[in-house]
Image (cartoon, rainbow, N blue to C red; front, side, top):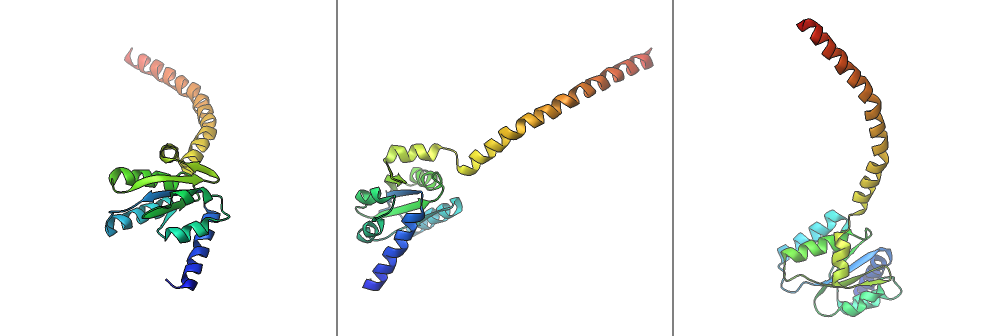
Length: 172
């Protein structure tokens, strides 16, 4: 790799690290090309991305970013998963690690907070931002729905009573 290409690579990585809210580091040694493509596709669908770069260049790119704590994890063949949604990258990484034993999560960083493997798994078990938004909307709409049901209930009960009297008088 030429010096200019290395500098450009470092600048791109630095921009990614500055804009991301979470970064997960994992070993990928032994994965096939098809498995790596599957990981990239799953990350992209979740709104996350995967980067494989030289550890030395990645450490240089980490300087001055919030996720600089992952620098100590960059040893050996590592892949870095990043996302703006704090749950997206960890969720995909943990699910992929369950299906592929050669994909080993080392840890990560959420902002300036360092995450170990258990923290990444705990983060992955949280609902995503969209799921939380839908739950909040559901909670806000629920009282109005119940109020509508209550206002319709007396009329429905009255109609059933009148129907019962009508059917009784027809039978008599």
